[in-house]
Length: 241
Image 1: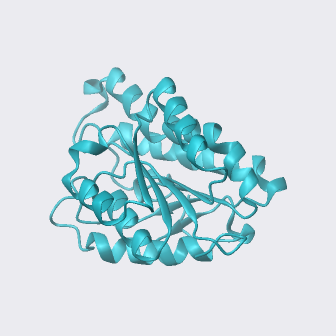
Image 2: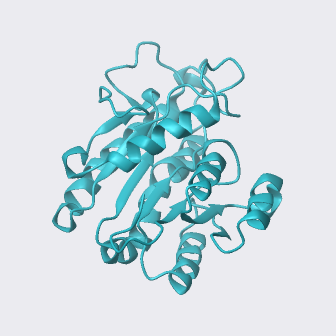
Image 3: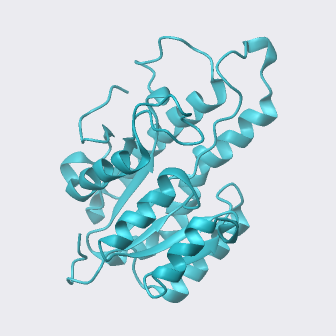
């Protein structure tokens, strides 16, 4: 995956300290891309720091809390001091909130708001702050990590209020982004990774992290304007809204 001028892609990844985000960093570095890895405390991730030592020229890490306006502004200002373009923004940071069994009478509205701040508004903050870098790239892409649990059509069991609603909001935000960036030919998609063995997915999930990420990279690299505003699974197949 090369940029328009044939140079390595410049990729920004949020939530890059563990799980899917960390493996995206690893696999793209192995493909000779340049990565900016964002996390609330990137220094606390031994795996991410090991990658920094292995790829000192290609990987930079920046602290960023996507739920905080000032933190996102500062992180993106640091990116702009290093790079004049961004070819791909992958909004991967996410939190789950309270589990499946909480009834409506037990909902914690403060928790729901905090989940929305990360899962939905976090992606919007990032896009807003790196918009100029994306537009200058020439063939940039925006990818927001969602979940089938954000699909209204697929919701057959209820529960998990904060996570479901926040991902549904992210899906709608991505469709709006697709309209906003259409004139610049920047495709914007939401991507469902499948049920993966991460801290969030749990040990019973059928998919390994590396397998899921490898599939998603192939899908991301194939995304064009014909896909903008769509919800895709890791293999590039349409998922019901």
